[in-house]
Image (cartoon, rainbow, N blue to C red; front, side, top):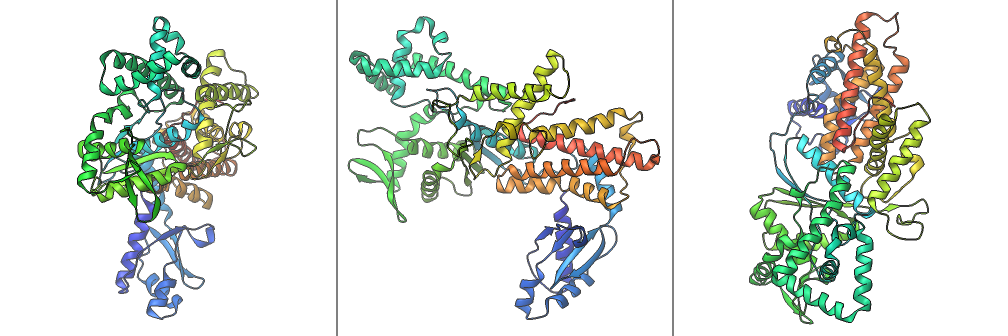
Length: 564
């Protein structure tokens, strides 16, 4: 349920009764004595009406109905309105959420077709840590949008076109008799091809010739190119499977997909009188910048910008997207600013929302971009394998597991640790990659939440009765605070969706888990001297807490385990 919407409607109704027209923004209170929510919009109204803000607040409060939803309202400070919610109403709605598979979270009444462009590896190399943030941020936003009822189109705009592919397929042809084995290590394959290109002039000429043949549709060269792309995509699929990401081969719309439309895109822009010639290149200039966007090089070659513009046309005109999110490194912000401006000028995107979901860089403890010890690029699969290995060491210190159990648990914990450490940081910020921190049982980590879920599950398993027959009935302030937090889940998801910031959800889940731990310490559940009705209510609160934690982690693409 959307708590804030309910409270906002009540405040808006009271303002209307006072003949006051104003936007209503409800804030969560930080201290119990300030109520559950607070409305602090009276101060600007006082300036407009030139009246004492407390007097206006008193008038508004007198029009607020006390009873079903609100138990008490009061004027505080210079004109704040503190709102206290009715425990019975909170209990009733918590029970509705408890019995509902979606935790009483409604689907949108206005479903959009949302296209999310994320991951985008280059086929010439294996996925590295630089692809991590785009992949998991994009996937979590796709999961959330789908959960909220939107029609989600996942798009993996992989780099599979360009001059380097002439070199790569020429080398692939030379070793075609065992190409699969040679391409097990794409990094080495690329280095070997480049070495051959630099040292063998005949091979270099052949590679350049193959570039032209690929672009002109030569059957033999395209066959080799497709073989290279197919094997390369298998590398990506292995990483996606290990990472628990929902991208599939069907979601791939590579650069080459738009190749046949590049000429049409240029003509379309020329017809709109947007293109100017500069040093032989076709460019688009902007009023607020001295840097143009080059659409076609002097030699006739196309650039990323050309492909991106063709992609927008396809996504808007063919896929009928209402909203397109580009989950791409913040260093590309200028490119997307220009791209979106062009799309707007030529009406590519009328009534379509284009957003660049920018993110910062993963750094090592020294504050430098994350690299191997010798300064090389860290393969993403190696990072994930190392996290699983370290997770195994971490959880083995607490309990003895069978070989089968430890492998499964370590994979869930290790992958979850990497994903959560990234998603728990404001995506616009750089962040420090720290193994010790991300695999800790303490603090805002995936392992802390997973352990919290296990602890709640253990409590529920020990109960002999039927959990489904238990109902929530709030009996003290701490229980009210926990139930209120649980009912804020939908508000939280809405904020994440609006801002495209998964760290809002991670912070909510951390606060929820921490609050439950405090609740469990102060409000015993299974102790023999606990009154049956109170025990059942606390079990129901525990059950709703576990379901909420699990659902939140699922949206983030993180699994839970049964024991830790």
